[in-house]
Image (cartoon, rainbow, N blue to C red; front, side):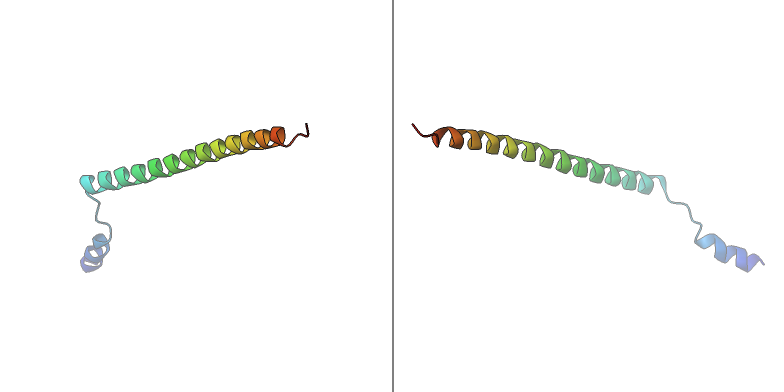
Length: 66
């Protein structure tokens, strides 16, 4: 029975604090990068939409018959 307990404890080894902190920091950095990417993409999409709207207004004004 003692041999079986020794074998079972091998997979139950606890992770060290520095290793856990590194993983937490890496996940936080990954999430921050994802948020930065999504927000930047939304801002660019809005800016392009505004510019297209302005260009369309200018094109419609220039195409009016005189």
